[in-house]
Length: 98
Image (cartoon, rainbow, N blue to C red; front, side, top):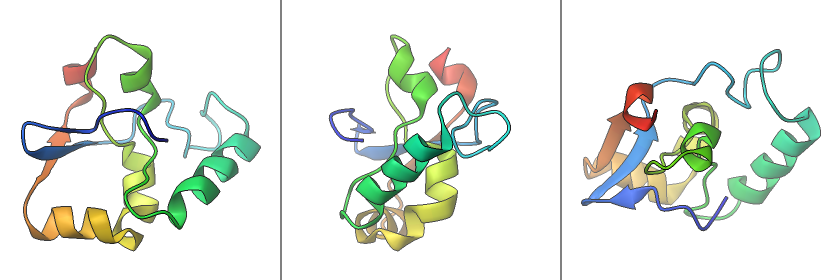
């Protein structure tokens, strides 16, 4: 998803854990599997494209990259790999986004 700022204060923010209703958890996700597949297709081949955690989108909080996406696809993205190598990944706790 684009349009949601996961970069702030010099860091790329990623959720520290998958949330309880992570879209990457088949039995708990709040959206159909086809929508997840579409999000993966839309992001996997576009440098710097990520899936933003739906908990951070729905609230009045700062956004963070979905941990499910990060764990499965993050290291395939050269932008995310560069962020890891340069030490600018910041892992956010779910409580930070309540």
